[in-house]
Amino acid sequence: MMRGIQLSFSNTQKLRLEKALAQLESLSSKVNSNATVIVADTIPVDEDAALKGHGTLEMDKNVVATVCGVVERVNKLVYVRSFRARYKPEIGDIIVGRVIEVAQKRWRLEINFSQDAVLMLSSMNLPDGIQRRRTAIDELNMRSIFVESDVICAEVRGFQHDGSLHLQARSQKYGKLERGKLLKIPPYLVKRRKQHFHHLDQYGVDLIFGCNGFIWVGEHVEVKDAMLEDQVNKSDPQNTQSASLLGSSEEPTYTPLEIRQYICRIANAITVFSALGFMVNLEAVMETVTLSLSLNLGVHEMLEAEFHVRVAEQEAERRSTSTRRK
Amino acid sequence: MEYVNPEGLRLDGRRPMEMRQLRAEIGVLSRADGSASFEMGNTKVIAAVYGPREVQNRSQQMNDQALVRCEYSMANFSTGDRRRKTKADRRSTEISLVIHQTMEACILTHLMPRSQIDIYVQVLQADGGTRSACINAATLALADAGIPMRDLVTSCSAGYLNSTPLLDLNYLEDSAGGADVTVGILPKLDKVTLLQMDAKLPMDIFENVMQLAVEGCKAVESHIREILLENAKTLGNRRGV
Image (cartoon, chains in turn purple, brown):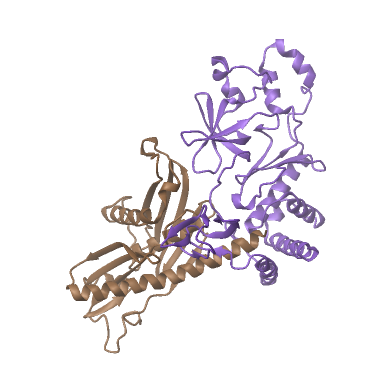
């Protein structure tokens, strides 16, 4: 019933979970009735002039689905939005990825797409913030910026002519992510929104929802960020000017225990949410964290059966009130 | 040996045209992009699909289509006598190839250029008809992974023993030495993508046996579709709007 987690539910917990999930089902089946299709299902189209989008195929004058998902119609366009597929990049998406290779003038990133993404040295801001041509020296120093297995946040720039996917990180908010936790959830559970970076003030935690289903939960860093610090610490004394500007040398080099616990708490909330297959967004995650705090649960107890049931019940409650309001 | 007794029952109590019980489950593995387990009676297989992902061996990369790879293996504990098998013996290489060809025919590979799709199928319990079960499991796993396909391939076997066509042979019937016809079809397109037979059959009998196997494929298809639709609905409902 739930992918990837094996929990032992007691009989009452099982019943409660079933009840909550049945409630969710009745809520959403009112909204989208019969829009679900599976492979090789015929999609009814009104006109012959319908445009066939992703996930469809024309077969004997019928439009047929090629993936399992939900039929979407936009004017004449008919397409199938699939569940559980890998990430499909769109220009401007904010993504989180892991560096797997440092190559000539570029880093290769794993982003849960069908290919590795490419971040060119020339499409990111240099740590010193100066706009200039990238020299051979910069190229040699690439490892001082990102090395293999670093986690990076970037933006999708687009496809090149050769079909490879390019990223860019032209702002201080992009770059290396440190002191935190990377979560991988199915990308269909992350919705594209205006805001993907969140600073949770009360917990001192940064939360980044990558459109590719990689979610970063980490200690909050000011936008001057670690990338800059690294460079400052390593660079020669000429650069004291910028170092004094930052004044970051006294900052603690460790994450306080409290913040680490908050990071794990938020990460567990997201894990539970994605295990249940619910859409992950800021409000839902915060509610779950608040719920766990109000129940006085330890961080590890959040991954137990009882909390899964609680979260399911809470989500059912939340969705039923929001539909009633409409 | 008598494979169909005078009452018209087979060794395991089935009628000649009766399938074994089908059971399928989607999403049995958490790390794979798509996964499924499929049971036909006592035969149980598990399939995992990874991809489309970056091609591991650059020289195999194709600029106009995806590379499909398939690996079939049998667990050491899957048969009655436990024996250590070499990793790629002749039999599993052949079945890997068969599954690979069948699945590649239905995947829309041109939509995922420069990528690779890996299909791993493993037999957990072998009781005849493993290649059919593997193909069915692989179809489910591919659909779960959201890989675009022309149609759901389904497969079923049929045989001919005691001058009776038998559907879905189990291990005893399979090893009886009679003909064993494995058929894979694309139900929507009504096309045959796989047809294998060991031993010989007269033409008219072969047609009957094959027709029986095709009927079996269609029965498997309706079962698979039910499972997939239910799975898709739960995913959609849980996700919410």
